[in-house]
Length: 93
Image (cartoon, rainbow, N blue to C red; front, side, top):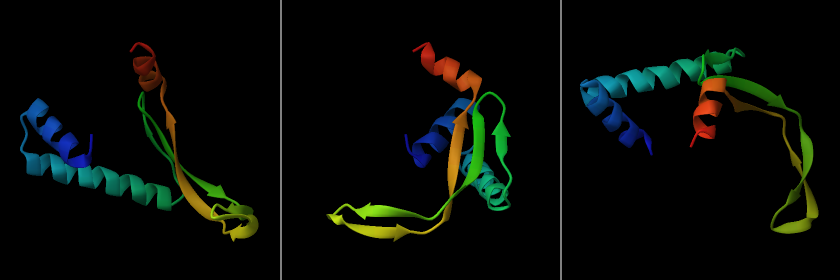
């Protein structure tokens, strides 16, 4: 399911206009991104937690030439930790 399909499903399920759901979803993702950029985490109880993690610089291997080593810079990456309700829902399937 992509973003467009998600918006269409929510609009149909909730009897709300497609445009209203699109504005809401864009606002939600923008808010989550801003909080992660500020070094905070976002927790949606039962669903999960979005976290910004710092990954140190390291040496890597060039996949096109495995003998060649490359330097990989330090970077902050997004992580998601699934909540209990989400994990339980997937276990039941």
